[in-house]
Image (cartoon, rainbow over the protein chains, first blue to last red):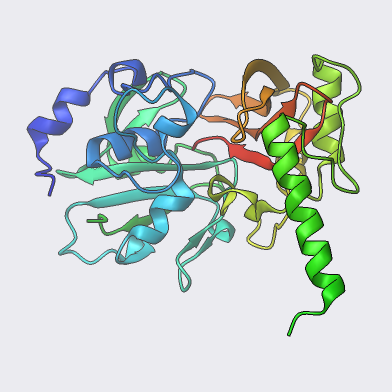
Length: 156
Length: 153
């Protein structure tokens, strides 16, 4: 099992997806939020960069809607238990998420990062690099009403 | 017990498939099959093939599971329509991307591997969702079971 640490996450800070993905799925006009999370967390399930890019190495999942249902528990960010100090952070329009059935629609404006150490580590598709932001800063990733935040306990 | 006519039909079908396999004859196109207008396919031919394949089920590939913008989306046409509907803002960057490369089908036939992607870029709101499919070079048949759904995010 991955030992997620501040040091590990810090090694990714500032990196372009080219420096993360060995399968050369690194087009700047693609959305790499789930892709980055999956490389860090080693999520190999579902559709991966190995399928979409070149099959050079083990692939990492590339889709938010496939990661979300793998989380053992999901909920609105505001209802996140205080004991949950590491988790995934999602943002989208609330109408795109069905918490009861753990469904996240494949809509354009959706994003995911890793909440660890009080900040969210994620891939900025506009800056083309890994950044970290406070949850408050992350909540402005999309304008309202596409900025409802959700948490997901890290899939194993 | 199987009726004689059914047995004869099964033998005939088996013999045809065996012949097709061993002589390299392409499998005949099923009714309603889509053929591209010219070979190799131009971007226009490729897009026409996608439009003509709109009723292909999303069950065609595991890559198409949950790609619809709504959970009820069941076909390639409905899936792509969901993203096309997001491209209505004229001040944003929206475009269609096509590409073709040569390859081989699962049966070893020479094919063109076609990619069709709908793209949108507006700051952090960026995506490229589409399909990849194969066109048989010998007769321009769109291999309906070759459809995959492409995209990330």
